Length: 113
Length: 111
Image 1 (tube, rainbow over the protein chains, first blue to last red):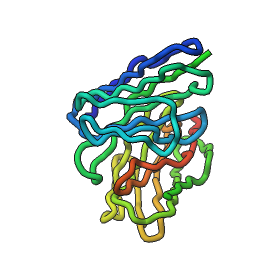
Image 2 (tube, rainbow over the protein chains, first blue to last red; image 1 turned 90 degrees about the horizontal axis):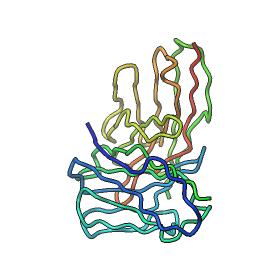
Image 3 (cartoon, one colour; image 1 turned 90 degrees about the vertical axis):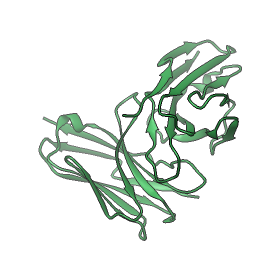
Image 4 (cartoon, each protein chain N blue to C red; image 1 turned 60 degrees about the horizontal axis):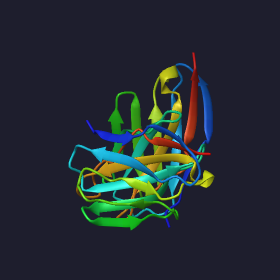
């Protein structure tokens, strides 16, 4: 059973605030991902990491940043939130090679007023 | 660049029907393909992972097939139930990148 935790689950915040979305997994997976999903739309990859101290930008340009200091933890930060950042953010992880299954967390629904 | 198309975009059926969801992808150089279920406002739940060397994979009332050379996968749901109502997503997996998603098929099963 995959355990990926995301906090908070819901966040309503004002424009200009700095926010950090937390993602943790307990399976020791080396690969972790952040996706963004607008309502009714497909998931878009915004960041990924293949291990500690490794981070890359995904296909969709994002003003957010990520860090990977510990294997189990992959937080996403927005320095100055804007209404255009309103979306659902989904964290995922996978172990080892590309043949393995990818698991998702429950998501964080962010609303920026 | 891999593109994923899922047909139909939406489907409404009465309880008990067998149904097929279709997924096509443009680049057949994949390791495997995963099917997910997403309930409104929630994360994704993995349903089936089918490797490129496999033709079919089964889990309970779900059966996924994969024709890698033609870039197609189908998800067959037997004896549908209201609890199956959700959006179903397929995602092919290629080297050097993360899973690529289509817009999914939104299924509604009425009792």
